[in-house]
Image 1: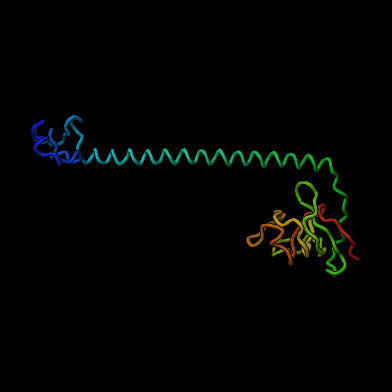
Image 2 (image 1 turned 180 degrees about the vertical axis):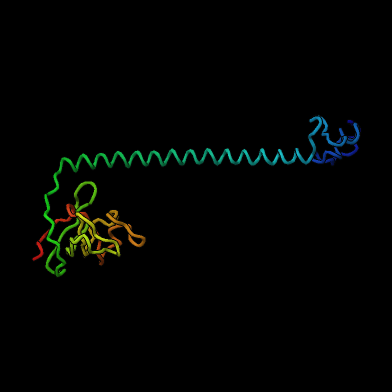
Length: 195
């Protein structure tokens, strides 16, 4: 065998039909692969080798996904913690009692108001003009409903605050500048009552 290896130094280690061991022992028998036993063929061995590579890749992806899930869980836990802190702050800072105007749509020039954060600290997120509190009136083709107001947003103060009722076109209050939004009645602070 050493003589064969010396005489043919360029033999490929991946070509099993041409390696030194095969030249000494002769060709393989059908349905067998030397040292693997009956039933193992080159085709099956090649397939298993590819399958092992695929399994290793899936394992690596699984580890990455688990890491991402853990990161998302931490982010969710942090958001819950902030939400609980905001709820505690809101409970400590009473929101002024706001009386909703009667079920009337009025002139937009006479009824200014401020929109407060609908969940959390009670900060002013926008200024606008009260338009209606009629539950049957619509805001972007959706009925206003009870305990809500339709407000024309003139000036946004906190740009990345989520809308109370997001739409496919608007997600943040900044998207609603120059149009109407639905806002919870207890989070609309009237500057001048409509008359």
